[in-house]
Length: 320
Image (cartoon, rainbow, N blue to C red; front, side, top):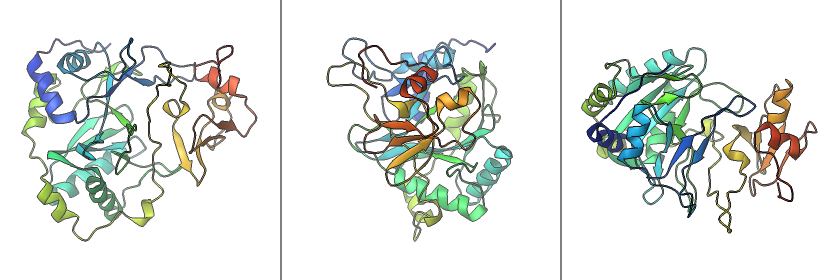
């Protein structure tokens, strides 16, 4: 069982300074879905259905272990992020993160490795929020130069957050589990090994890291473009999920992980197929890009079966 803490407001404010660039946030469910996943849901006010705003009290609950939250990288008003995080959860993941960390250090950029359930996260912090597009140009080019694998379709490799260059109105982008909290699937905490396993010590270490300036980032990417090899590495944007009536709508892209896309559809593993050991290629389910309310299992699973497998069965007289 994970260790409980009772942090003060000061480390919570330090956490916000380091990690929070947008006040909307997600909160993880307390019980797993039938497929074993424990999804996050956008935190909303019960009465108004408006997104809740992240504050020091929420962060303290996360650090204490009472709840687990995730964070959105990009502030859509500026298209900037306070950090870039490299997520690696494949065989040899930690070695890839160490290679990236060493190469970053040679560029004069300090990065911190956080352990995770199957690998780790590599965090780079800006001295001030930096353009997400420029952050991504730098990291993707660095991965290409080092030969570090990048996740594309069914190919294992690193994933880079933020996963978009910019967001349109009403979009949230892809969120990442906030560090220093409890991983609900394992009921464990995963720390930055460079500091003692206490929230205060961890945040003190992260605060002391030299931060990447905008001038330095621009110098590092001078003459660079986003690598053509990774043009297809895209992520489904998480958009607004409130219906005009204020009722919460079903959004399948919140509950499945896409493996690829084409000109018309996202493709993902079918949750219903997974329950009976089918869909080994992970692309039986198509989800229309233009309108994600339209989705289809090409192995024949019905919408009722897909929704039931996700723990969100279709209610009587409710549209899918």
